[in-house]
Image (tube, rainbow, N blue to C red; front, side, top):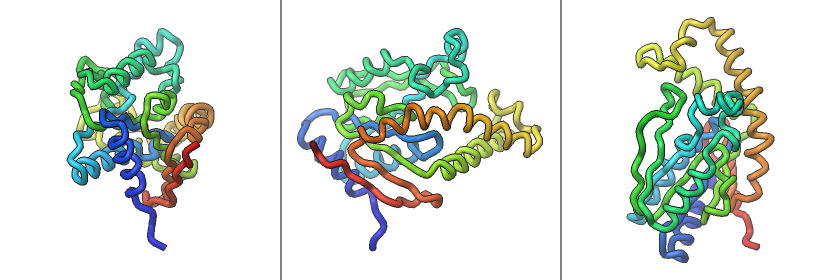
Length: 237
């Protein structure tokens, strides 16, 4: 049997655009480190190359409250949970995109792990892909919703690998967030990363992200080697 590929997902988006005849908004969600950004950019590239549609990817990270605001709200340890986002701004942005109104998005810097004083301008588009851990909280704004899944131990390992890569990169490319971690003994570093997963990312996955899975038009499941295990398309009701 041939391995599943993304043609069925592309078909969902292309059909939605053909039916709607105006900007199509795609929501992509899944747990931390499941590969949302890579997947969204891959889909965007494939759509652009195969159809000539004007496609952009925007991450929900830009709508996080700043670290200072999160601290004031008592949400510093809930970063990434639905309440840590400026939901009013997200709704307004998605509304602008759907009506083909030019808009802008704040920039989240992964070097500082905070919002910075920059914006990304978003012109009218054929397709916008909006990706983030709790993106499907706005499922009613999406023409197609996609959920990415991997088994929890796999996502945990990918999170550890990704965080380790960020820490190693900070040795040559200064990062105010990761610089204090550079000389931490490896066992202590892994303990800190595991604690972050178990105290923040895993509860967010269980409490907030996984409950949105039934809202997705398609669920893409990954293997540990990042190959696609399966793609399940929800039947129309």
